[in-house]
Image 1 (cartoon, rainbow, N blue to C red):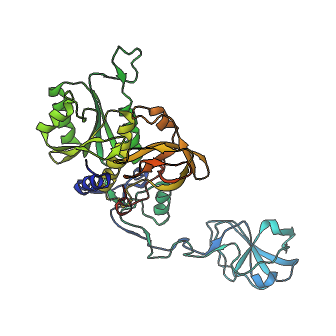
Image 2 (cartoon, rainbow, N blue to C red):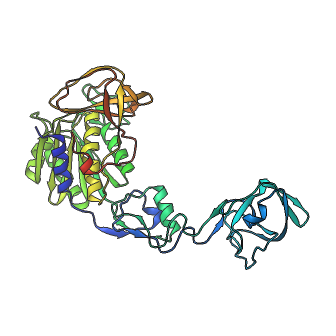
Image 3 (cartoon, rainbow, N blue to C red):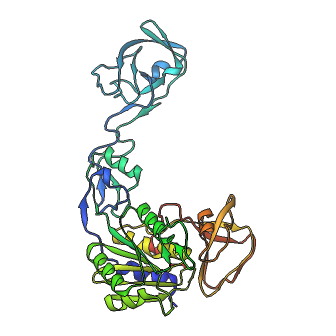
Length: 408
């Protein structure tokens, strides 16, 4: 069997890079920057007020209460040529440029208006409630790095420096299909004996959508070699990657193996992991193919360990894997020491996890109830209650590089 870390490295190293494109911010969420982004100007671009209140000379407020003459009213978006002189103040709104001569702001809550004067009831120190030009980002600073994947906050950051069309890896197109005569659509009202509904495909479509790729849902392909072959050939010709579920184990009737063997350079692996030991990876022409196991939990775990990091690597991302934390197991468990074992766990308290339910590879309900996967490494056959384990948080964005994920 292949070690999990070695199998992941092989997949990631083999993935072809997705081409670059210029994409508007509105369409860039989830994509990966193809070049560093440098701020063309400081942020904020000018020194401004962080509060509604009065721009003052801090020295005028050293002894309070004190009354200052109000010489103007400055809304946001207006730049005044007025200069604060001793004994004066200007009423100013949040975000408005600080007038000359002012070095502090007094919040409106700390003032009382008396005709054309304002009584200051709290002293201000230089810099109070003032946002200086470049206080967030200096002109010329590297704001985001090549390989960063863009989330909503990154989009706002790019907008703040005028980068409306970032250079990114274009959005990959990924085909998804389920295989098997026993697999029926989710809306099947009554299942015939021996039939099951397709849980894998909706789950995989959701995982791919979360990753930010464009999904081509090819539905369910029955155990028909000619139809499966033509479906895979068409998918490989029009997509950046193909993901299948089912038909990659050691059974004689696993048709996917037979078809793939005649189509491209595809290897069928047994990976030292549980669940998801059977796995296929290779190329149909130049298009990567991921053959995931048919059991739904195995399919999800294989996606997390191979498909997700593989696609992120193809997009040029530097962080490929979900974050891991350390937590104590609330109960003892026995595992298979020859494999990396992924246990579905839920938080039972601060840094304490418990089993989320049944651990068989078909028990999807426990995966739905889980907060993460407790990772029991090779060589560990038993974990006592209270022992600390790594927990992979599969509901969190990726944070680990390939170099940080070589311990399995």
